[in-house]
Image 1 (tube, rainbow, N blue to C red):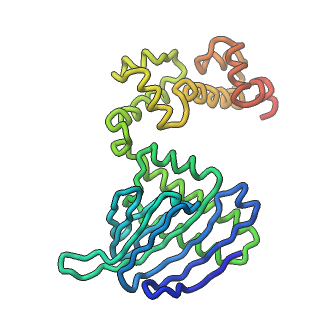
Image 2 (image 1 turned 180 degrees about the horizontal axis):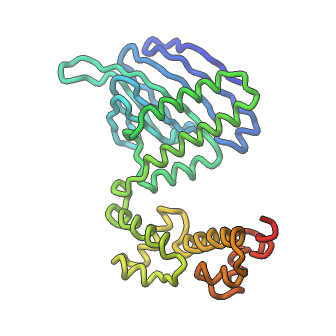
Amino acid sequence: MEEYFQSPSPSVSSKRILYTASGFAKNNLIFLQETGSLRAIKPHVSKRDNLQSYLCMMVLEGSGYIEYEGQRYDMKKDDCAFIDCMRSYSHSTGKSRGDGTAQLWSLQWAHFYGENMPAIYEKYVERGGQPVFTPDNAQQYRDIFSRLYDIACSEDYIRDMKLNVVLGELLAVIMEQSWHPENASTGKKRRELIDVKAFLDEHYTEKLTLDFLSASFYIDKFYLSKIFKETYGVTINAYILSKRITQAKKLLRFSDLSIDEIGSRVGMNDANYFSRSFKKLEGISPSEYKKTW
């Protein structure tokens, strides 16, 4: 269910949809709460906090700023914000140019939520994502906002599913935009993780130890373990194992090699260890996987 209306505020001219997602969507999907666009008529400030929602907004024209977690972030045309609305924030238009005239802004925005959103936002921040950023492809964001609005105001009986897909696309482009290791809390060391990960991607079938990686990349091994887990969400050993099992699955499906040979090919010479590890990740043994697929 949705409600479309023109804002009665004397400060803005807007059209928005207050969207009420189904119980199924709220329990299982990323769901839309509100979306729309506005044009400021005069300078104003909007403040909120303790709202169970995430906000993505984009400046179409003009300028303004957001204050979030005690910091001010200036915004101009094509800038985007992505913030957790449980935290106190405010945004304002009417910032003056050097000649003293106001650059009142126009915006597009979406409020949305889902049970997994706190973890997604935490990952965004871990990757160096900022509350305000300038996207590489502004039109991509405009198109996503427009599609959210069109779907929300349609009579489509699977709107919630379609909105979930588009919101997922929005999060994907935001997350892609967020990878700025130079902004992350560990700075230079996080940039070096790119090289570590690239090395693992190429050499995962070899015997790799934390001591070897530490010596090769001149990073303390305990620190390396910590920031790798923070950045990629898994330990180094788990990442290597995942790469090996993925390659093993390809060989099980598309080669005539024996299970022992496949284990050796992916760097796991102990057949029992290979089988146990495979079952732990996939829920079935290598032989069962081969038969099933």
